[in-house]
Amino acid sequence: MAVAWMKSKYLQLAWAMMKTGIIGYGGGPSVIPLIRYEAVTNYKWMEDEEFGEILALSNALPGPIATKIAAYLGYREKGMLGAVVSVLAHILPSGIAMILLLSFVQFLSGAAFIQGMIGAVIPVISVMLGMMAYEFGERAVKGLGIYAGIAFFALAFGLLQGIRLHPAIVILLFLGYGALHLRTVAALKRRKERKHRKRLQRANEKGGGITRGMD
Image (cartoon, rainbow, N blue to C red):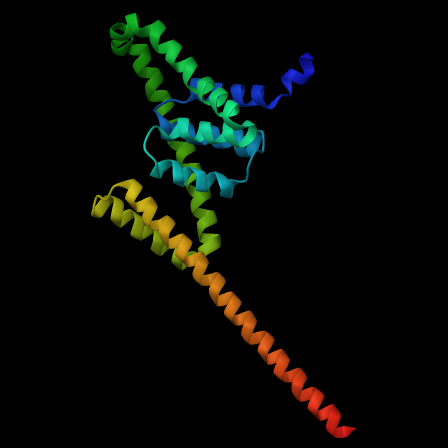
């Protein structure tokens, strides 16, 4: 019974989301690499491509991104109850810690050792985010080609930093382009296959005519 419970998907979800909720520092963006490690590398619930798609959709939807991804993982693995377990495991540890430490907020915020801890954690989070961004960028370049990948990166950077467009709008624009691109590529592929079949059919008809003439 104990072994079965330790191997249960509910416990895996709870333990994975509890770790990300406790270790994650700095809000949703800093937690994403931790959730990605648990979902893709540790428990292998999904591939990197699916995680990237869920990350994009979570960015486009309102609300905290980490809880949305946690809810999706739980629902994907164990349905509605899994989503509830996953979200609660993610938010309860930090919520309880906030309540317990509320009376010490003023002291902790000005303590020198706390400032030192924050200063030590920030570089680690920056490196983790940079590694994740590099891996997603590398995958995008492989899928689109180096020139198209660089062009889309420059376009996204210009929309976000130049025009100051909201990230959700940029994500929706790129999702719309991706859907249009896939439909266009599929239509061109079907058109090419139809032309190829017609050429084969004409070649077969010509070959049959030559054979009948020889007879």
